[in-house]
Length: 317
Image (cartoon, rainbow, N blue to C red; front, side, top):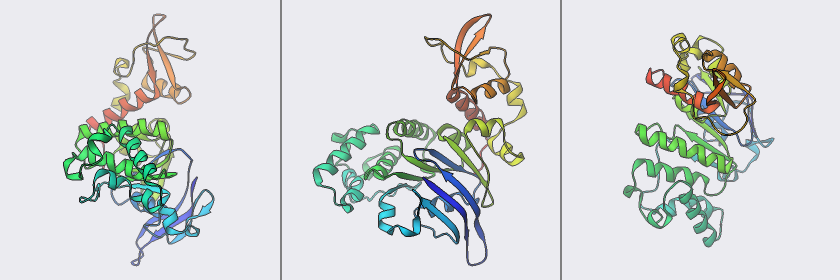
């Protein structure tokens, strides 16, 4: 879907922002780029839609070089969500969302229907919100509009540059949950930049950890947690030995569901054993004294580890 072939970005003073990146982002994947400030993650993102021009190498979308696309065609087919919400204050919510469909000359009834569908999809009643101005919405509501505006013309790809980092923790968590639900429904290719490991673990199908303009490790949340490639990744994700040694399975376990379970763990198994099994299986039944007392899923384990890291403050701004 999106491929980087030996891509670098250098500035006039020979400062290297991104160095020799080789990467493939799959169609329909939620791909999170994470790393400390100044590591090149936003530069990498902005090169996809040519907001920043690469210096060396090639980026392709659907096997076509981005330099071969008409710039307007390229950007109309890539949604973009910023940390700064950037809604036009003098326009209604409906008008804000309709900008790209209008540029693409969609018919008015189609645009109006699309606006209503998208607002409803993120829990904003179209009858209540479509004619409001941005100043009449909360920060979280405005960011929801920013997300659906990026989706309005049904792009293949959505780029998101730390879109929730300016929000309060409650709004941020709610929007993360909403985005996961939305992605399950629309299956877009999402490239998401974050500096928050908890957010990356919660959202990403795969995570790309960067440092000093280079990729350090790419993997699923399970792979990153279970097998950090070096001390930098280990420290960044906050995997500490005491977390593994002090583990209560009740913190992760969900109520037992109906049905047969092919794969199980013991209530006394270590977190390392559970992680190894979850790397191979989506769901595990928890057994104690021969009885099934609960269920552990990949998602519940990832959220537990991410929450643990956040509570310890193991994020890098």
